[in-house]
Amino acid sequence: MTSPHDGPDEAHTVPDGVSDELVAAVGGVTASFEVIEHARGMLYAFHRLIGRADKELAEALDQLEAAGRPDLADALRTDIVGRNVLDGRWTFQVIEEFDSGYYAAFADAERSVREATMGGRRHVFEAQLKERERTPGRPGHEARPAATHE
Image (cartoon, rainbow, N blue to C red; front, side):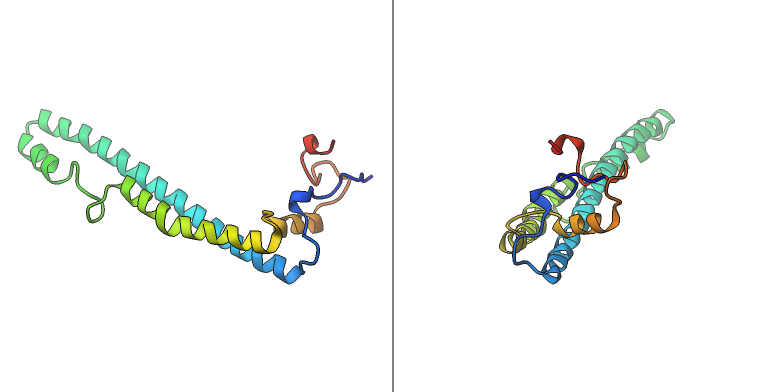
């Protein structure tokens, strides 16, 4: 049994006069930006992993020193500890440069495309896909969360 609320909310419906082809094209722009979001997450993972490696290295150098090789520990402290991962940059600077450059430009472009074509609505293509694939009235196949059914 379906209800008048058994469909996407207005924020996920196709604006009047917008073709399926345009919805799909805008969905493609958004999907490509989602790949950038994934890459950004991996950049943060890189940042965290480098930090973890630095901490583990500090512990290992203390052990190396305690094991009678302060010469090797000091050499690594001088050469590796505090070293830039890229020219002039620690990982936080890589993230900041990415965020303020490529990421910001891509995010602005994706948003501009949605605003110019979908009235700013997000995930319209995915909402259409959900409507095609779900089974209306079946538990677990609701169009939206129960809180928005009211």
